[in-house]
Every structure is written in structure tokens, then in C-alpha cells.
Image (cartoon, rainbow, N blue to C red; front, side, top):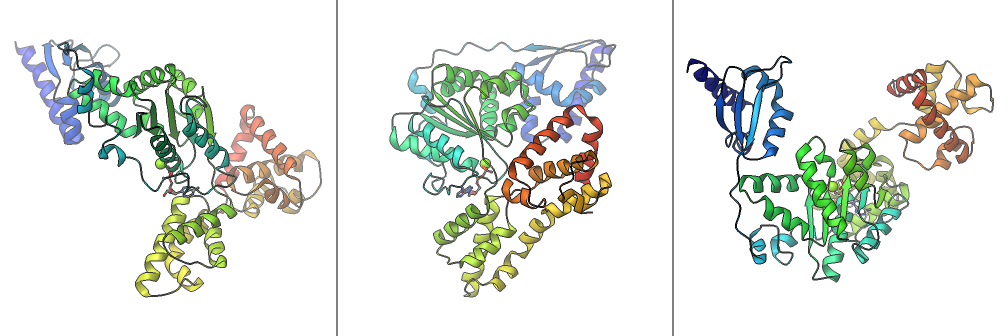
Length: 449
Ligand code: ADP
Ligand code: MG
């Protein structure tokens, strides 16, 4: 009896401790439904509403559990989990699915999930996104019949969400009967958590599996969410097996995501396409377009100036135009270089600060490998010079967003194929050569110092 009391107390103490660590909703979702079934000095038996809760506890609170609960000889919490029996749900007729909040493609709530301004028409094309855009157009024209899944990856603010919504709009507009769902990975997880809590997982599964097109944004948020990943993978397979279209976006290509091999392999089944940062001309075109759509006129030289200083994020370009447009309207001014510098210099400073030039790379390489910059730019093929030169070329391609031709010409007029060859060579060599890898890393760290 005494032992029981002690163990019971340990659970209450654990809850007390945890409630101060996590948010109220997390506590309600995950901890409140757990019941203590059995208590001994050696172990504790917990009743959990579903298997996810077990994973969740062990993934996130193993250390805390070990401190409060009985532990085994390895110091792991000694817990037996029993999943509560779920009363079999009575058969849910088809229309009951409409009760599900995200279900009806016709209702307004659903519509509002697609941003009305994210269409193909408003997406400015350039070399960095041409391929992705044409893949997206292909999928939108023939959902489930061209590339499946379509996996779009790229850095922040480069237009992934825009393209996903554009696909959604096109399909909704042209194939009215198709059930299209566009959802962020967070929302998918939340849906799953909600339906676990409401014991409506079957309904949710049925909903997702009955779609014709599933669009999932920012799949990187599925990393480290083990059981959600499994549920997602099942949904995904079920759709693909029925030739239903799946479109996914992520900040990295599938192979770099920390997800199960099974899911990564599935995501690589179809077409994997990357969006890069736009080149100078595309940035100018985007600026002009965004300005025009806000009724702001900006002279070419000013668009060039902004495009030179903001170069790796379309969202920032858009932000610059918004800021400029608001300022000019409020102050009753026309756009001029003076106004631009006054309103946008903060954004520029950040950009300038991060800007890496070929000169900076040459300087850093020259210091690291003890060779002269003029030699790096010269023609000598001796190994002492050729290797550092290749490293500099490798770093230039990795770190600077410019055409290969332009980069190569900064190395004393080399060709772009020389640059590409060097990049490949160093990339490969670094896989087996630990010293080289460190040297490259340190050169990178010393940039700008
Ligand atoms: P991501 O999802 O890749 O982070 P978004 O799709 O949210 O990026 O894009 C950020 C902003 O930039 C959005 O307002 C989007 O409309 C705009 N944008 C991105 N790429 C383009 C483009 N090529 N043409 C026009 N607008 C773009
Ligand atoms: Mg996005």
C-alpha cells in the first residue's frame, strides 16, 4: 500500500512538473488523458488513448520520466503502456464526412485556404524556377497522370507555397468535381491530434484517402514526428496507389530530410524539382511586376539598385516594394534613389553584410593555403596552386548566387566548364579527404574576417 502511494505520488509529481514545462494545450492533448493502471516499485502501467501518446512521451520526455518513474537497470523509465480500447465506431455514412471541418471543396472555408493571389499568372518566370513551374503546370493540367508525387524544394521565400496554391487554383477551376486539399504539414499534424482526441481518426483517414489531389506544404516539419510520419506515409501511399495526385514542398530535397527511408523513397518516386534564388534579371522583373500591381512606378535604375542589394529571397523583394509604396504614398513622394536609401537601407545592410564576393573567397583561400591571390587567378597548374584554386571555385559556386560564366570570369577569365569541373572534383574529394574537408570548412568560416 505504501509503495503504491509512493508510485502514485510520482505520477502526480511528474504531471505537476510537466504542466510547468509545456503549454496548456499540449498538456490537455497529451498528458491529461493518461491514466495510471498499476503501480509497483519496479514499474508503472499507464493507459494511453493511442499509440502516438507513447511515442510522444518517450520521444520528448524520456529524461523527465526517468527522473520521476521507476527505472530499469539501464536507467530507462520502466513503463508498460496499454492502449485504451476504443469502442468500435458505428458505420459512418458517406455524407457524415461533410462534418469534418476541412472536407467540402465547395465551401468557403476550404476556398480560403488557397491564397487568391498565388496563381500561375502572377508567378514571374526565370531560369531559377522555369523547370519547377513547367512541372507544376504539367501536374495542374493532368493531375495524377504526369508526375506523381511532385516534390518542390527550395529556400525560404522563393515561391514554393505560391506554386502549390497555383496548382490548386488551376485544378479547382478546371476540374470542379475533383476533391483538392491544400494543407500545411502543421495543419495535418493538428488534424491528426484533434481526431485522436475526438476518437475520429478513421474519419480523418477516410477523408484524406478520398481526395483526388493532396497538396502538402513544408513537409520538413514532419521531421522528428515519428508517428505522424507513419500516418502521413500511409495516407500518401494510399493516394499514390489510386493514382491520386500528391504535391509536396520542402526546404530541402527528400534525401536531406530526416525522415524514414521508406518515406524518402516514396517522395523520390515522382519528380523532384528545386527552385533556386532568382537571377538579377528575374529579380528586376519581379520588382517591376510587384510595384506595378501596387500602382507604384519605379524607374529601371532604381529597380536595378534594389535587385542588386536584395538577392536571395523573393519575399524580401516584395517587402521592399511594400515599404517603398507605403512610404511614398504617406509622404506624397515619387520614388527616387534618395527615398530608396532612406526606406530600405536596413534591408540592404543585412543583405550587404551577408554578401560574399569572389574576392573575399580568394582572400580567405589564399590565407588558408598560403598562396598568392594572383596565382589563384593565374594559369599555373602546379598542384600547390591548382588545388586551392579549385577550392575557391567550389566555394564560389556554393556560396554565390551568380551564373557560372560570370563566376568563372572572376577567376582571371576561366571558362564555366573549368569551374564546374573544379566544383565536382572538390565535392567528391571532400567525401574521403577529412583534411581537405576541414580546410574548406575553415576557409568558409574565415570569409570576411
Ligand atoms: P516559400 O513558400 O518558398 O517560402 P512563398 O511562395 O511564400 O515562398 O513566396 C514568398 C512571396 O514571394 C509570396 O508573396 C510570393 O507570391 C512571392 N513570389 C515568390 N516567387 C515569385 C515569383 N517567381 N513571382 C512572383 N512572386 C513570387
Ligand atoms: Mg511556404
